[in-house]
Each structure stands twice: as C-alpha cells, then as structure tokens.
Image (cartoon, rainbow, N blue to C red; front, side):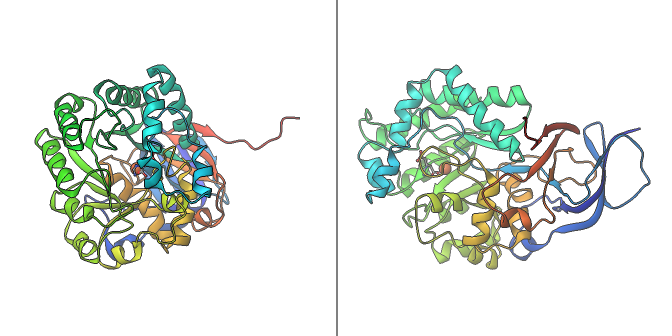
Length: 412
Ligand code: NIG
Ligand code: FE
C-alpha cells in the first residue's frame, strides 16, 4: 500500500532529472502539469504526472487550486554567524560603500568579532532559527559556509554547528569552508593568512564538502584564489568562489579553468568569461538579492549567460551584511524583475540546477526521487515570483511525511 497521494494538483512543477546542470535554452524547459497526481511510498516518489486514480494510499491530500513542486534548494548561504549589522544601514544611507565599510574594519570583520564571541551552542540556536525559517519557506536542501571565524578554532566551530544542524534535521546539507573570506585584523599579511587557511585544509576536510574564497579588490587576488583552489583540490575538496561580485577581477574564468562546481555572484564578469560557461559544468550561482540589498544599479548578466549556453542557479546568499534574507521566494521575485528570467528558468534555477551547484540529490520529484515536496497556496507556478515578499508555502513534505503545515487561522 502507498503512503500518500496528492490529488487534483492544479499545477504540478516537474523539473527534469539530469546528470549535468541544465544549460542555455534547456533552462526554459519545464514540465508543468495541469491537474496532476503525486504518489509516495516509503519516503520516495512512486508516481508524479497526469491525474490518475490508479493508485490507493493510506492518506490523501487534496491539492485543488494549489501548486506542487519539489522542495527548493538554497545553494549559497552564510547560515551560521554571530550577531547582526543593522547599524550598517546608517552608513549605507550616508553613502559609505560595502568595501569601504570592510576597509574600516566593519562589514565581514564585525561579524567575525561577533562570531568569535558567540559560543557554539548560541551559534547553533541562532542558525537553527534561521534554518527553520528557510524550511518554512519551502527549502529542504541548503549549502552553509563558514568564513566568520578566520582562525582555526572559530572556523571549525562554525562548521561543527552546520554539521549538527544537518544531523538534527536530517536535511540535505553541504558545508563549505570559507576561511579566506576576509583578512583578519591580527594577520601579519594577506599572504601569511592565506597560507594559514591553506594549512587548515587537511583538518577542515573532515567537516567540509567544499572550499570557497572571496576573490575581490582588497580581499584576495586572482593569483591567491588560484593557489587556494589548487591546494583545496589536492586535499580532495571541490571548490567554489565568490567571484566578480564588485570588481571584474576574472574570478569566473578562474573558476571554469579550475573546474569549480560553482562560481558565485558574477555581477562584473567579463563577456569572454561568460562565453566560457557553455563548455563547462561550472554552475553560475547568481545572487540578485545581494545586488538589491547593496543598492547596485547593475545586476549579473543572467540573460547573457543563458543565451550563451551557460548553466545558472539562483540562491539567497543569506548573510548579515550584503543580503539579509533567508526567503528564497523573495529572491525568485528579484530574479524575475532584475535578471529578466522566465518563470521556468527561475524554477529550474532554484531546484535542479541549484542541486547541481552543491552536489545534492534534490530538486526533482520524478519516480524514484526522495519525496521532498512543497504544496503552495498559489494558482499557478508563475504566481510565486510575481506576488513577492511573502511566504506562499502551505505544506512541506519531507521524506514523504508532512513536515510543515502553515495554518493562517486567527487564534481569538
Ligand atoms: O557573499 N562577499 C562576500 N561575502 C558575503 C557577504 C558577507 C558579509 O557581508 O557578511 C557575500 O556577499
Ligand atoms: Fe556569499
């Protein structure tokens, strides 16, 4: 006997299962079934497709007038961090830029201080709240970076917190060591600090899946990023890079040359580097919520990357400085408005392609897949990026079990 049938689904969103990330025109191809059925047994999808009455199950959920999709994947977050930086809003209003705040010892370095002064259990509690918020917004697969410790003790502390969250909630999580995220005040030199982070790799690899670096003016150069990525690969870690977020240093080209699993941000990437995406499986992870939050005019050239045959994904970049939201639905709306992505491209970018960017088995609900499903209170799949800033999740189903049920009833 099957466990669950989701019946009468108004719009069933079915990204295709694929070994490689969807690229170019394939990103706009998405099966959306009007009047669909999903059948679940033992935590797995038995059937998803056109309406059928061929199956029986112990439980039925009626999804009349609802959208059903795979649970979302947030492929880039700085989930585990201490403190917050609301005081920077005033500096931003006064016109002080992100890199100027960092130069003055604020920005990332202020979160480093807070993270160092926060105990492991306190960090866990704070990140747990943020993770549960993400789950309530329809996300069941998450990448989580360190990078606010900038020393052995505190980087490992962040990674342990990330691992503990995965164990507690049994989620699809990936953990990223971002030791070279900034140069701490006490460092003798950039060079020495980078070497210290490279020396940590053998220990870090027991906790981390990926190694990441912030390649940016005043932070780490292309040459330093290359040295770090090669050292990380030699330790068996896959690599990622914060590339061309503000200045066009050429991080995207480096990522492709080093066969990075993803290159992230890419607001200022060169035409030449964008063209190289087609022939590579490096996923361009675009973070339009960050461009929005930093108040920049110019967004990553998502259209150019797709039209040139590249693979893109969309993620929040949730962090306390440059993108203070863990609502991926909000970022889907910004992707529609500012990256000019179609609804199909957006759904593929937050499901199947986001899963490729962090090497998780997630983002699809075809027969045999894990039954990680969202039921949305929305009339069609275009509606979710359209009606922005609020949470459209009605139910989240994890491993075939009802996991979140959002009830909007008023208590008195
Ligand atoms: O992805 N750019 C570097 N790192 C983060 C921001 C971190 C912060 O400001 O605390 C990012 O935007
Ligand atoms: Fe980031």
